[in-house]
Length: 227
Image (cartoon, rainbow, N blue to C red; front, side, top):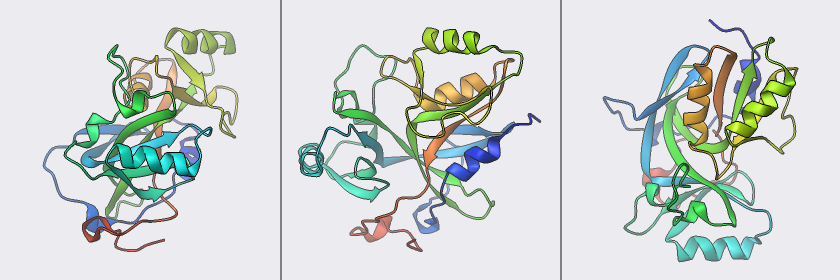
């Protein structure tokens, strides 16, 4: 088992209790690494994890959502949210098109930092499940033998960046990184790929696990216990 500061990652994820929202599925749609354990993820088809650029006002964001048949399901901040589809399009029609030259989705717009999947995932305590909204960030700890210069070259070669959010580095070799719209994969895919590299101690996506101002107008998507 790889030893690391993964507990910092776990502390950065805030818990969302919404057991009533989860439906059992036989096969997961994906996974993320917790140490060396693969944690299953079950894709939702009507929820989108969104982050708008800070240049947009609250009124402009509301107009964009309406124009794209979306409504706010929960907010982390004014610009970071999970939205729900209200029209005929499924959630994947909004995702940022990493690794594609066809940039035609809402997530590819210049005023959107990312549009990403929302999953159902087991809670950290092993009891029940909750929503996990993918962001464009992931945590990564490189082996002690990897120099800072090598890390910077690796980031440049893979179209990755250090996050501009606070606390992006906890100790030498541990980083909060982000994919860009030039990257070939989303943050989950990139974290899983890096985790399996011999010179990486661990990598795991930074997901939204709590949304502070719940919009619960749709009873079938309301969390069982609001925070």
